[in-house]
Image (tube, rainbow, N blue to C red; front, side, top):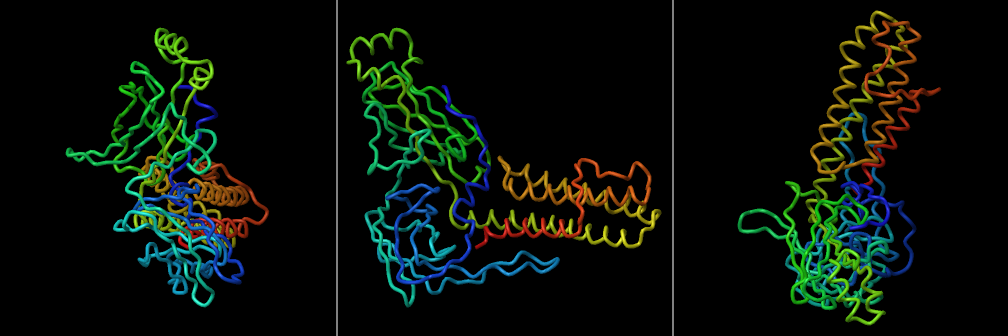
Length: 417
């Protein structure tokens, strides 16, 4: 199947933190206003239990900023309990609301939420109440047009030649998890086929599996076995495509002979997709915490090495520097990089690419400072560079390292808010 545009890997953390990065707190004046609900950054009017949703509006609660991390201490955690915010769906109070700023509230739709259309009510103590209708359904394929983003039936109707009725992750009696894809192709006769492509992280994300599906009595169905164990949290996409040029010559000739020209033109390419978000509120937060603790531990180790390097610079003792480099500095840098690589290998896709870029920059600054000092002290040539790290010289390495460390921690800690 032909694919428009490049295949770009959208890493796991983008899916995990799509609604988790905090924005600066803004002034809160006047009553709250609700404008829309989003799932995976896309506007929706129907959700299912266990969906992690983002409610957008204005005048909503904003958590206070996180404190600076203590030197050598654990990452700071928000102590805000969101006590001024009350959210109900269908009259049932929602627990465990995460509020990020004055324009967003993030919450999980409880698994026991009754199906049907319910008012989503947000009350901000002392400032008023806002309401938005939201439908809770047993399963909702979130439709999108490839290349055009998410769509709703309020703004666009699926092509009558193709529709997706089910895209769901199920566990079979054998204990294996499978993605079930079902749909209809009422405009296509038996003998035609469609191609189904399973992707992770976005319509341009990495493809996981694909196959051609026969159309029988206007329907198609298939199951894709889960390609990873455990499955990465995030968003999975199914894209279903019919292309007239891919049909056998006899079938294509029959279609062009029996259908009017306008219908044949539509059938040159018909495509549609659906989204599925994997991961409950608690699972997402646990994954985020694990990534944060990993990054903080690496940042602390590198900060200790930077402090030791400053002591070596002040002492300016070549023999002591060489001994320290052999027994401490170089092995510790190698161990830190090894831990980072091993952590990334525990995920099907890189978990925190932006944080990893900052860590790489931190190591490069540290290696640049080390190389300059090693050259100035005229140490043994075998000790003048950090293996596997491209040095980044800096006029003020101590200040540059501290600034980069702060940027790294701000980046990774913003997910906790």
